[in-house]
Image (tube, rainbow, N blue to C red; front, top):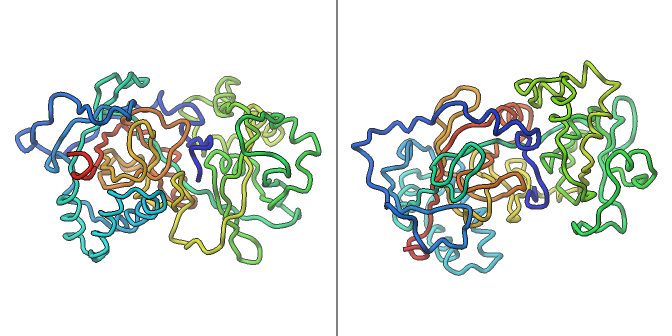
Length: 387
């Protein structure tokens, strides 16, 4: 998904996550007497992670650890191993080799593997982060997803909105600023750069925000798109524009709310979209990617629904196992599980901060669009590297 190349999660992009993040505390489901003391002062061996303070903790302090099903967790772990092998990180590679002895479907053995070779580090904010003060062990957990929409390789019928590849001669480097969206749409600079055509311009704009997506073609084939670059303009929230125009309230400015507004005001859709001068270009990804896999995260591996998160690289090592404790945005039930730091994003800033990957399609998008929860985060790091 290449979120490190100016990806913005939906919630972050519409500028209301912080305003609506105080939705209630996260239930830990543990009695104080059951918890083990957390080291009183932050460890000095994590100085390179300037956005976070690390405190040595315990497996017993992880709410819901015993109840995690670990379904798909092993597949996500193996994806991180692909990154560590490719980047030649020897100590992580040793753990990956050791894990090859384990059956992927064995919950007990999987759990024992992490408890044997890893230890728990509670993460707290190293700086003030909006409503979360320095030293707090709570932060904001948002969600993102991979959009799926119907489309065509040619302009026809209802398919009138183009999705573009990066123009020839344009560099993906951020040093060259290109014209804003409104000028690009009026000019002929993008003529011939169309990858496909879709029906809904607002859905296409949300795909730009997410940084990847799938287009279901009329011949039943799926076109998988990934981030290729931008015009390097500053991102401006079109949801904030709607709020400033008094078209929507903060509470209404969700993905669904914006889509509903667009259907009622088709004559103003371009005006709304042009409020954001930034424009994202795509490339067609190889068809060999499994349908079970998500888009490609910023460490170069495909994401796993419910097991991949985006974090601030100044907070957590790339690819590392992480434990999160938050709540489901719809049911408010506890969402506590092992995940992996396989993505990042410009809007993902701070120590206790994560963007949770829900998967592909409308159901995942509904979850992601509503997710702005209070949460806690623990880094699960190798004992051999961080004794």
